[in-house]
Length: 129
Image 1 (spheres, rainbow, N blue to C red):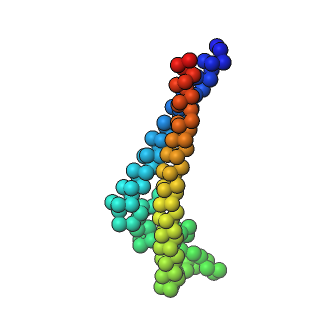
Image 2 (cartoon, rainbow, N blue to C red):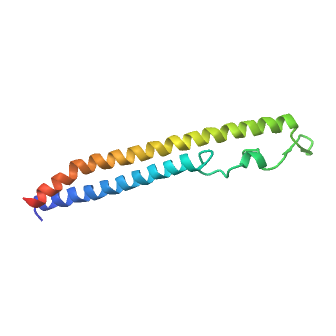
Image 3 (cartoon, rainbow, N blue to C red):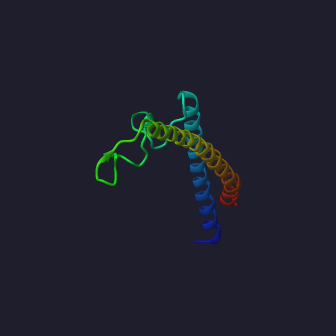
């Protein structure tokens, strides 16, 4: 294989990969648009919605045992604090997920467009000459 053939194959492979990046970026942008417009609150990535309402404990699925080995139940104030902390964490997670979706859609699309804009014309010129 000559160097020209290898260069042509390289430029076409990078062009195809950049088209895949563009498609992924457009998919992320559409996903962000749907999540932003069709839901009251931006959906969480892994948590089930309403998790703080039904069970506000994060990481403590069972009531704690005290020193004597008896089950201690949290007071109303402790439950309220845990629920507020859980809701605060949920809002932070929603905002972070939204930012990640915006970042991914912009980054994938721009990188794909730049790579395609550089490599595809070179691939065409190598294959025509």
